[in-house]
Amino acid sequence: FPAIWPLTEGSAGWGDAAVHVPWSLYRARGDATVLSEQYDSALRWVDFAVATAASGRHPSRIERSPEPAAHEQHLWDTGWHYGEWLEPGEDVDAAIAKASVADPASVATAYLSRSSDQLAQMARILGRAEDAEHYSGISARSADAWRTEFLHADGSMTPPTQAIYARALHFGLVPDHLRSPAADRLAELVADAGNHPGTGFLTTPYLLGVLASHGHVDVAYDLLFTEGEPGWLVMLERGATTVWEEWGGVDSDGRPHASLNHFSKGTVIGFLHEYVAGLQIVEPGYRRFRVAPVPGGGITWARVHHDSPFGRIEVSWTLRGTDGSIHTSVPVGTTAEMVLPDGSRHELEAGTHDRSW
Image 1 (cartoon, rainbow, N blue to C red):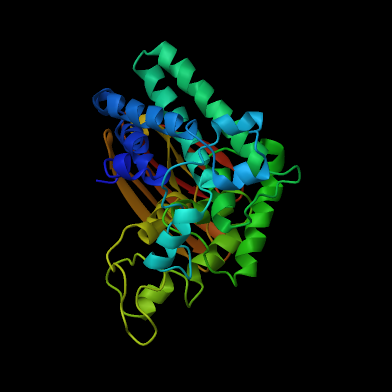
Image 2 (image 1 turned 90 degrees about the horizontal axis):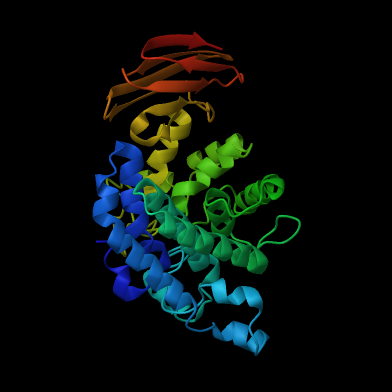
């Protein structure tokens, strides 16, 4: 459904699913069949996005300059977009009203760059060399246009929201020399919000992981465990058994509104798997994976398993004071790299492994 609906609605974040879903399935399963089956629809989505981006300019840019700057032909700032969708404090009506007039380029251009990059990678795997070169070029040009428009020389971004920083860092739009100051600014924005999330549907999946992987583990855990609205724990505090569409889907007086059964905020489970437990894909199908737990937040143990195409992967760790131990099961046909909290690294072959730090 998310991969089909935006073909008529024109929302970059959800339309990206036409590319990102088959790419993610391939990464998880290591079977390129899904790429060949979905390649034409993925290509059509990216071609639609490129054509829409070239079809005009947002009124704010026309007001800024009657003549477009060179990079603007690679900005996607036309058409209808839902945008980040339901950042804290927004209800559905307010978000739709905002989307009707807001400049969508910071979101849409970022997704254009990612969609075309992943399409290029699909093309390489399927032996479509010309397509790979073509869509790699589109990705690079749209990324450059995004940087020109929204990224500044000190690593700050416009508009200054948690979402734009988290998305840019996760999508690789920030050059290496600016990643640290950009992540520092993201951490500051979280602090300014009282350690509450400021993201909506599109960027909530990346927020905690981006912080943890850029030297702000404590901020990520503080954000995860902060009580009150907006935040994950407020849903539990107010009796939720499902995940809400709005951060405040049930008021403090018990009045519900919008959908109370949506997926987006539940994507925090990715942080629990990949950073708390520490299990991450390196090569498609988990042929090679990484075990890199990042303890914090007072958590003293974690356990996860994943049934990969090669068999079950298991990771469990416990922490006693500053000393930890970890157990990992590596299926036959796979290898793993282990990165422990003390910085030590271990190469793991098939079998069971116990380490400590």
